[in-house]
Image (cartoon, rainbow, N blue to C red; front, side, top):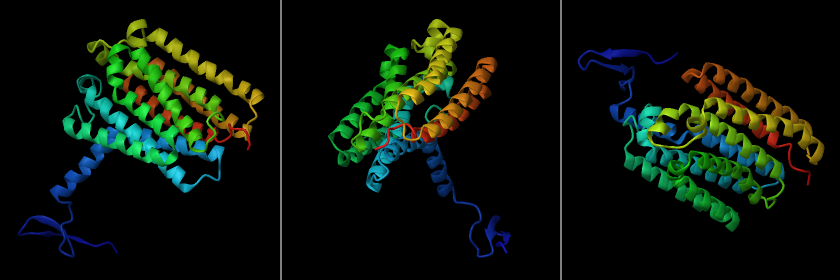
Amino acid sequence: MSEQLHINKKAGVLTSASGENAYPSPEKSNKIRLIRDFAQLFRLPVAIVAALAGCATIHALNSAATLQQYLLTATILVCTHSAACAINDYWDVDKDRIDHPERPLPSGRLSPDQVWWAALILFIGAAIAAIPLGISCLLLVVVSSILLWNYSHILLQSGIFANFIVATITAAIIFLGSLVVDRPLAMLYPICFLFFYTLAKEIIWDFHDTVGDRTQGIVTIPNSWGKETAFWIAWGLIAMLIVSIPIALLVLPMAHPLLFLVFATVMMLIVSIVLAHYQQQDSVSAYEGFVFWERIGMLLGIVGLLGTPPAL
């Protein structure tokens, strides 16, 4: 039987039968809120998906990889992506007050100093984790970290070029996993696939930030060439990826082609459906739906990754 609660009439406090306060203390509540704010700042679902993609790459290329390789790779990717989100919010706080006022920094729930130091510590942590994996992994992490730290400044120069940088760094997730097991060229098709997929996704995400980008003078495809053109470009990239699936099956010596075919096809089907809905509705709820289902599609794509490399 669960412990019954009663009211301490003198103090007016709800307590348990053991006399303990049934509600968390203000200090504990503040800590919980702080943890939630940092989790939102770091976009933890995105960081976790990145870590899963890196670990899936390692497993696909070498199922005998050590636990240390998995843990270090996951640490690098979680730290790097969380730090990138934090420093991006730090530099873009004025724009986010327009496009994303609910985020911890523009809403005032976190201070700029807290966000800046969190980003720095995480980038340093990613670099430290890369050291045992070798000089190639360390160099990749350091270069990616420098680009991500300065992403918002690059964005001010050209939002279109910034889209290419994000696509490149995202594709580097698979390249990192390939480097960890010393098979850097074994996943060229998935690397290219993820690059163009991310590029299409970045163009779509720019729709939601059009107003804030214009106030900052940021040049993106939607606010320069119009939403209709941007949608056509995004659809063109998605169509190219869909067509590439059967071609890859015919040309590449995949270890598990059926696994790749099923999950890659379902992934692209999901993305196509939610993109069509977003294009028709063009609302906040449609955008949020696109983000949610796109992440589900990415998880399926990670499973499809397991079938792409050639057998050892």
